[in-house]
Image 1 (cartoon, rainbow, N blue to C red):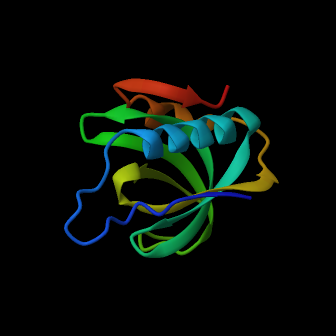
Image 2: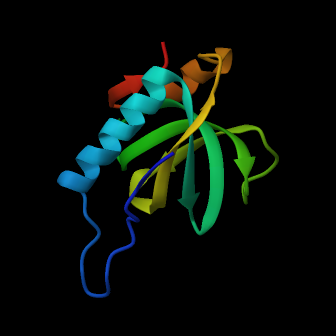
Length: 121
């Protein structure tokens, strides 16, 4: 499992929006999507596991389109589609489990991205 540094800033320091940490997360997400590997992450204080299907930029920042299969969810039953804002992720890890590939209903969700950096093909 690859675990990268928490995104929680030290008191008084701004949350990073680019640089080495973002580059490492870019690489991790690209690897997860290309290898069809699950990711684990802490989002809004809760651990979640998901299939990453698309990573890109929207008008509201960098997001990952995931099919959440495990962990906690305040937004309803699982499994379910989620758009995750990277600036709100506290930790991100690459898990050893894989998934079969694209899901049929992912396409409408992908259209919300202005720029796609990686997508399951």
